[in-house]
Image (tube, rainbow over all chains, first blue to last red; front, side, top):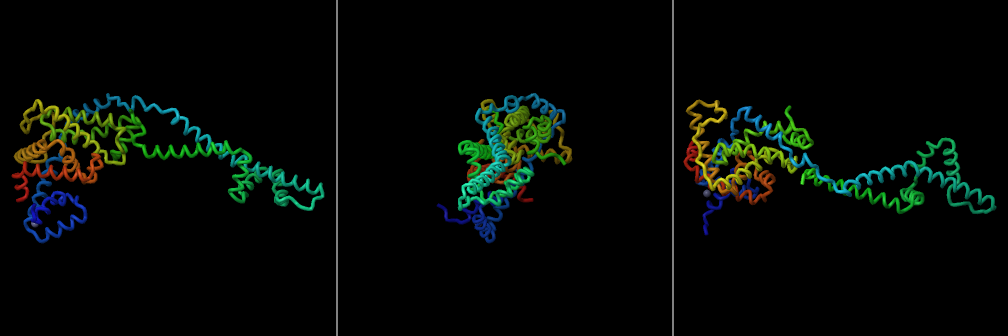
Length: 218
Length: 189
Ligand SMILES: [Zn+2]
């Protein structure tokens, strides 16, 4: 066992020269070097070796252009596996993204197309409720706001586009919207659409992680 | 502006053969230079350099474009040379005299005398690197041919950073012993 601090420092010098020490180690070495001529000289010897290696190893071999072109042609004749036979895509991998895309489109159609109709049906229902209540001479009016329903129904009859836009904007809470959608579409198909979307998301995330290997030939 | 290596590699993967041609033209001299330093004979070096380019093309789908292409290529080349070197150890060939010609261009930058001296030093350095244990050769060339940091070497080779440090430490000790006289001359300058 050696107690000479220089021995410890000297083992660290090659990495110190390459700026590859941890900051803590580098600090210790720097402090020692400041006060030790012998280790400073030793460090310079490692620097000299680096210079020698860098100067003589990092030299390209001069090649004639004909020599390079011969290699270019040889490589061109190559048909690597990743080019000849693309990875056979597994069945679920092929159809799942397509199905997820279809589900996403379906959800969009439902929101954009069916939602106003649901609202329209609600408005119509409210008016009918009111009419029935009045016909029966009931004193209690239905829960739904008939004035709003009248306005909306009138709009829808006059100009369906505007009413539809108003309906989508007009959902007072996402809960009400979800309830209306579930009522209209049914819980099972809606859940299936959402599951497909989730699966598509997971696949996209996985694909991003595996991107460099995505085109693997084997 | 010339396209980056990484971009060219991606273009080649998408089926553009000319993109890889450009990479071959750009890197073949460096790859050959590395093979010349790691292998005993000129012929073996030429074969290895060509095989390196072929392998790089075949394995291009395994290349991660977020890493430096040159580091990937040189790692692949160094490993190929090591495995070829192991195979040829059964039938060792003598190292050829410096200054032979085989279609390579002469080094015109220096005068004839300087060129010869420089070539002799280069031959000594190459010989010392070839005498390294095979395990240390790839990290050594990535450090001194490619100028990669220890961290970059770890990423290029897939070795833990601690292993890279140990390999380089041992490689440098070995090289310093082999090149003591040259290093001392360099030190005196
Ligand atoms: Zn000291």
